[in-house]
Length: 446
Image (cartoon, one colour):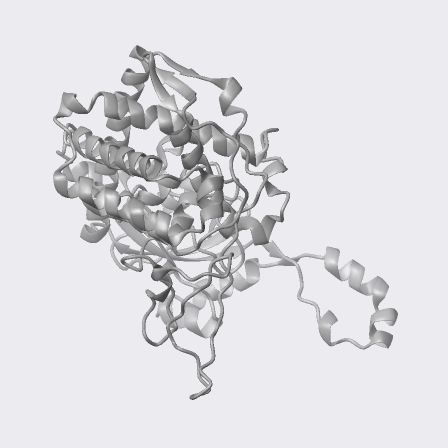
């Protein structure tokens, strides 16, 4: 799985290479020290490239949402997005170099095949981006290779550390019950027809509309009506009333407020726990701002139990890795060279190459390659990598599944590009099936 994770990193690099960027040259001295780990220097060339690589992805995915001043905007804690990304990158550098320093403890090393793949990916990255972009990013064969080498070492170390967990999960630990439910908000605001009103209607009803907007409808009668109609056929009644039927899976531990891992209110879980297979609760279940109509589907859901087991194992893996990393940090001497690191900024934005469609005079049709031009008007060999139908772009990545957008998780841009490498095996961290995390009939779950 970790080879897949590494290939996702290479796909992320390919993604960026297929989205060449423009910018001015960097004034940062790559030979200077960005930080030291137990006296060993971490060069600015590597640190700056990792930061700029993340910035380029963030620019590409979020610039249109947050505008050109996004790097100076408050990320929510009083710091700017620039500060947040730089802090995250420096944390990642510390983590990866610590894993690199302890690789021998787990017998971790790169194979010749892996080294070759890294070299090839770095070369392709440089070939696919404009000279201006590479200069701005501080991208050289050495810095790109080092970033990918660190990603791979960390992935192999993580895999080795995960093997140390206790893989025994008892049936009691992962046992799950699953119930279906329809949820109603206790109150809701009335719908308005403001879009279809004439100017005269709007003027005449201005005052009454204001009053109506402040008046809330009691949804209990509607919930009770559905409860009565659902007694014979839960799904049919929901379809008839155009209500969404959602499901929630839970375990015995979730019945305690402090241990609840679902997004469902504990009072609803407790009510469900009294039901047998196929049994529907006779009364509305009231929880904070909602009414629930519930039916027990299975008091021994094997599929949900298997999902819960994977979640438990993933949690153990995460905790073990964090434990080992923390022990490394405790024993290490990590120092940031603030005078050099403060020079890193993202003031010059990275942009995608403008896509151009060529016309063949003899046929009057485009060439169907989907190629894009570099900012300086020259094409790169990678531009013709699209499918013959011209509908796909090289940005789709090697497997069409992973995108560099994952590395920009959350709008605050605080995650590093390495986050985009997480494989699907990390996706099972939660035990819920669809227990209230989806939008339903009248808003979010309590």
